[in-house]
Image 1 (cartoon, helix red, strand yellow):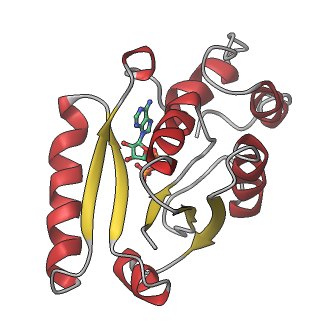
Image 2 (cartoon, protein in one colour):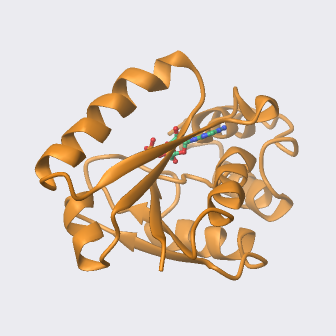
Amino acid sequence: MKKAVYPGSFDPVTYGHIDVITRAAKMFDVLTVSVLDNKRKQALFSVDERVRMLKEALKDLPNVEVESFSGLLVDYCASKDIHVIIRGLRAITDFEYELQNAQTNRLISNGKVDTVFLTTSLEYAYLSSSAVKEIACFKGDVSPCVPKFVADAVYDKYKDDSRGIL
Ligand code: ADP
């Protein structure tokens, strides 16, 4: 059984993430999309909210499951007997950070965990969760970036205008 994990913040899930997930799901028998519960990173949505939005967005992909995890990614992989991490690459700016993470994860897992990169589809090359939040904060149109129910949830977070952009 070929398994992989696609870890990330998904704060919130965007069409860029969904594109990577849809493509990766064709390459593996089971793809686990997992929200990193990172207490040091301030997020707009709680982990539960992010998991719920991902589940809704991915409900038509039968071999994709959604979870959350905390701690070291390689420990999480070991606990699920997963040896492949999926990450998306947008621009060259992603590369250095992703390369470092991939090499570190391979090292600390004694070569058991490798990272597979999928390059972004061109139409989503400039799409990020941060951009979605910034646009929504100023009441801009995020419909090209996220599904409608995600857009509504983001607008709702900013409706009292007091949070600032996260
Ligand atoms: P993280 O905080 O782990 O980077 P993100 O939710 O921002 O979490 O991203 C998760 C993964 O999805 C990363 O590998 C990121 O490069 C990738 N990604 C994000 N947006 C896009 C996009 N528009 N196209 C392709 N990959 C993307």
